[in-house]
Amino acid sequence: MNELRALVYTDESLRPLASLESLNNLLREAAAEAQAAGRLNIITLYGPDGDHLLLVVGSDETVMGFNHGHGGPPYYASKGVVDDDDPVLTAYVGLAHHTEFPRRWVIPMAVGEMAAAEFLATGRRPASIPWEEV
Image (tube, rainbow, N blue to C red; front, side, top):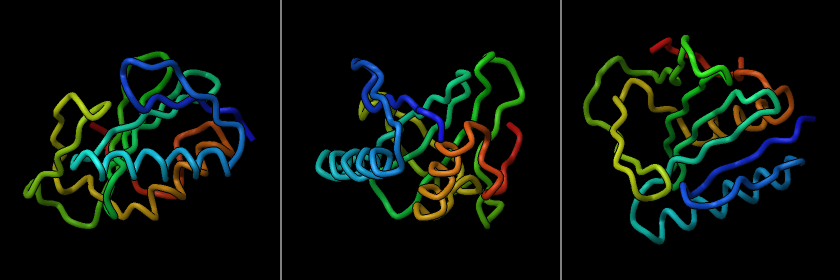
């Protein structure tokens, strides 16, 4: 199992996540904070080589993104079951910075949680969900 680091708010230090329990606790806490704020939050999980997984929390739906640690392309977004852009899913990085995602990237939160657990286990882009190169 890899140690991940997580960023929930843009003005905080990275939080270490060394176990599935710590990952699940973080996702649950971040979702509760987002629900209390009345907005969806975008959190970032960083793998050991700098690859990072973005995950929207605070709803039964999520969007995931994956970027390589080198910062260059290719970039990936989760591929949902529809091909439409609308209605968009609106979320906020650190509960502050407005971001909109096309509906085609939306997947169930339960699937996103499993993909985050896979990222913790492998440190690689999760193969358990379909991805769209963006």
